[in-house]
Structures are given as C-alpha cells and as structure tokens.
Length: 159
Image (cartoon, rainbow, N blue to C red; front, side):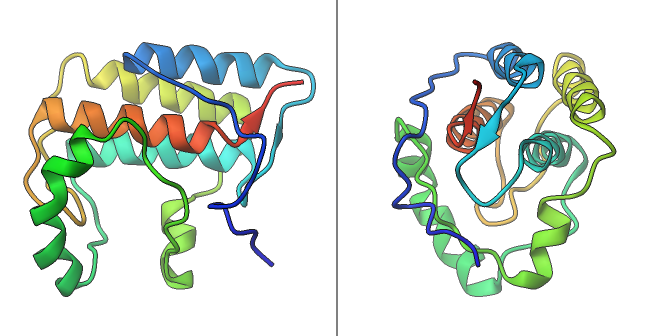
C-alpha cells in the first residue's frame, strides 16, 4: 500500500540552481553504498521519471491531464512557477503510473539517461506543452524541472 507522501518526515531539503546540480545530486545518490528512499518509489524510478519529464519537455508528452485540469491549471501556472518548493502528494491514476515511472535496467543506466537528457537541454529547446499547464517557455520548463527534481529527490537518502 502506498504511503502518504505529504506526511513523510525526514526528507532532505534540496535547492537546485541548475540541471547540473540535479545530475550531481543523483551521482552522489548512485555512488552511495546504501541510498534508501522513504517515499513510494525506488531511486531508479525517481531518476527515470525525472529523465522522462526532461525529455518530454523537449519532445512532447503522450499523456495529458484530464480536460478539466487542463482548463483550470493554466490559471495557476504563475503561482506554481513562483513557489519555492513543489509539494508532494499528487496521486496519478493507476493507469498512468507505469508510464510516469518507467523501469530501467539499473541505476547506472538511469543516471546515464539523465545525463543525456540534461545534455539535450543545452542544444534543444524545452517548449513542448506541459500535460496540465499547456504552453511553456524554456525558462518555465527549467524552473519546473528544478522544483520537480528537488521534490522527488528529497525522498532519497544517501547513507
């Protein structure tokens, strides 16, 4: 049974200023002899999820939020982008979990893919529509990726 990620204690307090900071943190987590996660997802799935989101911001997404969310969420985009932290606890429909948190062969493979996705952001624009917010600029996507990575990686504890 999934844990309520809104109430988990002991998460790391992270602040990333660049996608390179995200890669550095993931490298530390992967290199740690006993990284553990205190949320619902193992480290490998957190990394693949972040990678998939970065790639999606360039290539586009196959899934969209329900219509009512796509109509309402753009009204809150500015507030969301100005927030200093992203709150955990979004519950995806079971049918979307596998697509949002794909499998990877290993954490090393997931880290390699994350590095590749971040490298793509240096030469390709992140301007694909967000599944809930719609049209996004490259800078808006960068902000989303930093806050999104802080939130998810806060559940991963190197030991």
